Image (cartoon, rainbow over all chains, first blue to last red; front, top):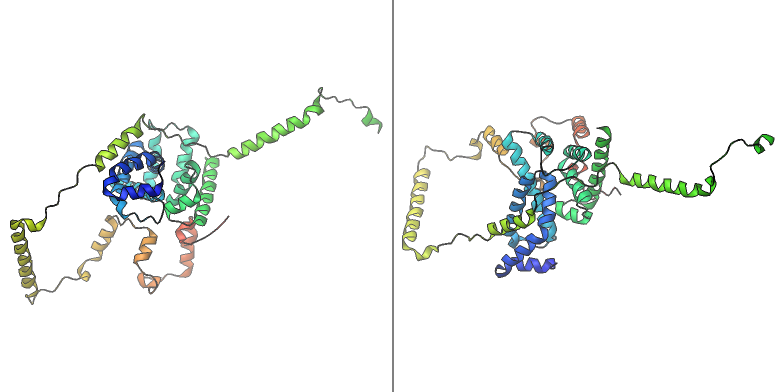
Length: 180
Length: 178
């Protein structure tokens, strides 16, 4: 894998941008896909948000200052794009954020790209009851196995607060699964 | 005691010899079960075959579209003249408006509160609480300056107690719980 710093330099130079962008998409498409998928749940919606995320990255790469890692910067864009997408969707459907989340989980039962069993469906129901930040921290840590340091950069939150959020999320999910 | 010596109970053959092994197996099994937890390890999402190959070419085709060509203004005389004409028109318009003594300039106060509220309600501000806090300086503003009715402390405490279940929302920094 190409070193991140070199990749950023190549992305910021016009003559090498196209080639470097191809490497970037190839390297991060799967990780970003799963990050977005766990927020918007539906495959086709994920596809839209993933493409928009990369297009935003492409258009804004010159503004990337290197204060954080390229990887966390892209996660930040993907997270914002996903949450904005959900907000627009709930507005379009005339639903509250919570109503939309519940409907998204209901739709999973008929989704051909969801093969979860009863307990996995229940997990999604439990996740839908959490505040956005707790859900994000939980999926990034538990399913994507990211380090607190990387999550902290991506979500611009201190590691201590993230640990507290993760702890609360696990507690709430366990209680939900036990009670239902 | 006599009674103990005359033991009528029996154990299967080799029971005590195997006891340690069986006990250790059971402890290991229970530990494994505890670590397993109630939360499933995977979440059951799948995707169409060959999706990642396809999405790459989709993204690359969208970003490699040629950007709109920019025509330099100075090279086209027609554009130059229309530009001058447009600026002249704007000046004439400004003078004709400001020259009229009866018309008052429109100010921010003329916007109905309902219109401002509708704008804020319907427009995606895309700002986090952190970003809003950066833009709106609260150093010189008390909470009660913004609100129409004064808030009693007890009401604030009651609200926080009922509504804040996420420590994040309190914007506290560097809370290390572990």
